[in-house]
Image 1 (cartoon, rainbow, N blue to C red):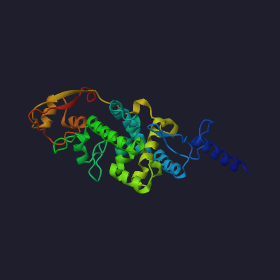
Image 2: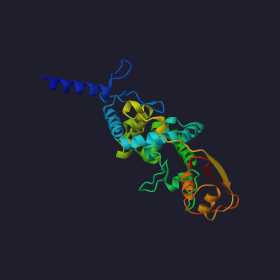
Image 3: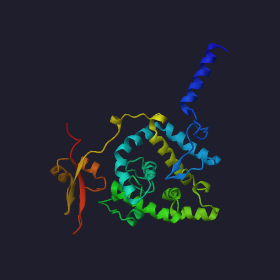
Image 4: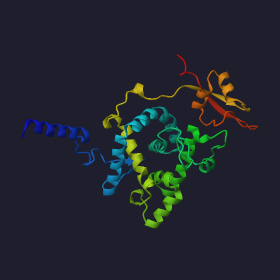
Length: 292
């Protein structure tokens, strides 16, 4: 064997070691290079099932190699998770559901082709059903705290219906009726035994993959220093109980401009805010972060 071939073999061995690591006695053997002993909200992932293992691997490989988006969601999580986590805890919804928000929107106020909006991607009718205001001037789907509370309300109902947090998560994508109908048709009661649409079939696995990667970011090549993570800017809340005819002028009275006002209050959807009698809104005004 020539020195060149020896070198190539050595490099290949080292590369495989770095990618797949050493499997300890306490970890199930994993041909995909990471522990398959995963769970969602303390519900076991049956990775011993062949298709389950492959579906999980697909999402792991996809997100490990989707460097731009995965890097950005890790950066954004430092800003968004501290707001989401206590609300989930307040409602008794497992912390793992913050990763559902990650796959829904990449933690930005996204707009889907179907009309779902915000970090939790609510459709207008569902948003109103869960107590959010959706008008031309105010759209609380863009209000992180209120939309997180609405998501919790949905998930609690789904958990009560299915008896499983995993199925509750799947229903967030496939709908409660849709998942229920498939369970009846196929005579199974477990998400991992269901044949679903492509999107819903991948849904929980996408959550699992982002959870694993984001919780162990350096292990998967995302060693992002703390100073590079995004962070929340301190704000004060201003209570509004009367109509604001020009939000740009209002912003200037608060020491900020229209752009900054909209960044911190994305639920304001017009240039004005009409306030009905007896109604109040809280507008957040940053106290730092925009001056030298």
